Image 1 (spheres, rainbow, N blue to C red):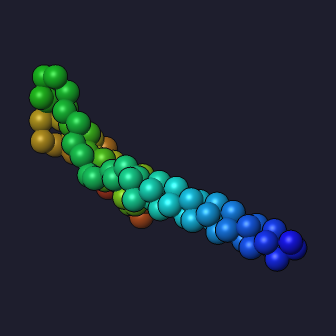
Image 2: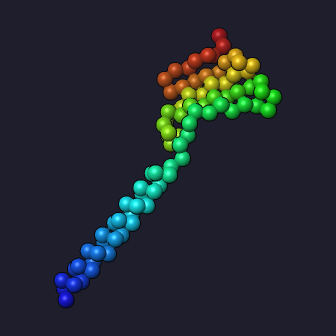
Length: 85
């Protein structure tokens, strides 16, 4: 009888473990990917470019704000760029 209970417990444990692995895999596989993107104002004069350093949006990013093609403000994890002097 004890062997049957141990075998049944192992089956339950393995089934639960397999379900946990599948759930975690599904969450990782369906994670949103954040690609670089430019947001444009309705007038078209202003643009904000955002480039995340990681596909899931975690960590630092690069941001570049421009008006009529001229960079007004730009900052990234490594440096500050395009700032007016």
